[in-house]
Image 1 (cartoon, rainbow, N blue to C red):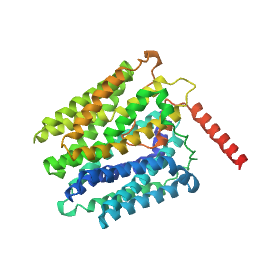
Image 2: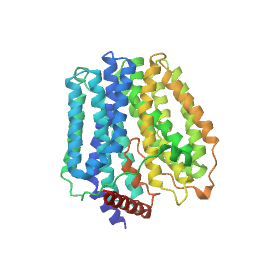
Image 3: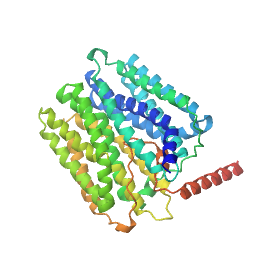
Image 4: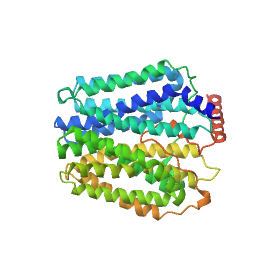
Amino acid sequence: MFEQNKFSIMTISSLFFAITFLAIGYGMILTFIGVYLKEMGVNDIAIAIINASFFLGAVGSSIFSQSIISSVGHIRSFATFAAIMVISFLLHSVFFNEYLWAILRAISGFSFYSLLIILESWLNEKSTQDSRGKVLAIYTIIFYLSTALGQLFLNVDENFKQSIFTIGSVLILFSILFISLTKIKEPDLKPFERISIPKVYSVVPLATTSSFLGGFIVGSFFTMAPVYILTKFNSIEIVSYFMSIAILGGLISQWPVGILSDKWGRRKLISWVAAITAITSILFLFTQDNITYIYICAFLLGLTIFTIYPLSVARANDVLDEDSDLLEISRTLLFTYGIGSFIGPLVIGILLKYYEYSMFVLYFAIGIYLTFYALSKKRIADDERSTFVNFPVTSGPELTMLDPRIDEEEIGEEEVKEEENKTEESSKN
């Protein structure tokens, strides 16, 4: 059995290498954009719009990219989207125009999340019911560590800041090498189910609310926290360490939070995590110029904000009965998380114009609201709880298929339903 699991992991190692290079480039550029624009004298609202465009592209990818991938295949699609992402990175370094950069960020977001969909569908295809949990855990660890590593690339020589875009392009090109030479069979990518947020909210209100607010905080933190730190300390080095420490805090907290939530329930853990987020956010108001203090606050905030979304998915799994469509619910929660990631930077960008600590004041308000909102919801009996599953800070809709809580029978039923829908549409035509 051990040899079989070892073999299954080794056969998909090329996918993990590709994910590593993608995540390093993703984390580096996502943080650097805000820093670079701030140093160029661009106002916070414009920075927020440009950064939010990335997540708008991500939302678009979840709706439209699967039709492109299914029509031309995984390897060609991967090469195409990676090439588009490289082109957008390089155009950043050639032309500086706020409107153009917003368009380029949207294209980058669409391409990046399309690449994730391709890789995740491959991982799902090669994973068995028994190995899906292990594959998802490895994916999560790789993504967090790689994204944290990407922050350290910001410490390039001050005279070569624009080389960041070239470095990001090289990293994306490296990922193409691993995919182009892979011998893994291309899977069939099925169309995603129609997303209905009101329907899902009526079934799992706490999970839906937590997903949206989690995306709001994480999306705005990745894009606007670097702007805040640069304004306060005027040091890209501090920005890179601040973000790396926060991301590592998110990785470290995944398993303890999961164990505690399995023991005491998601409702209580969501409330605790939200309360700690609120307390930590207030601590940022007293940082002054103490760098050690700001790093400690970053770690504490990372411990909580990156666990809100996985806890929301676990809560949904606890509430749903056997007749519910878990895949549709999970994908809708991820879509809701993406919408929150898009709105978050826009709101924070506007507020920063009026008060430098507005981001953390808003995080405090969200934390307090979610603390009491979670406690107001029904408690789930111990014997009805599912098992907590870790998810990376960024993922595509295909990753829900790797969730070991979703059995193969449900996946098979979805595929049958999709085939029936195709047959009905073709008969109408």
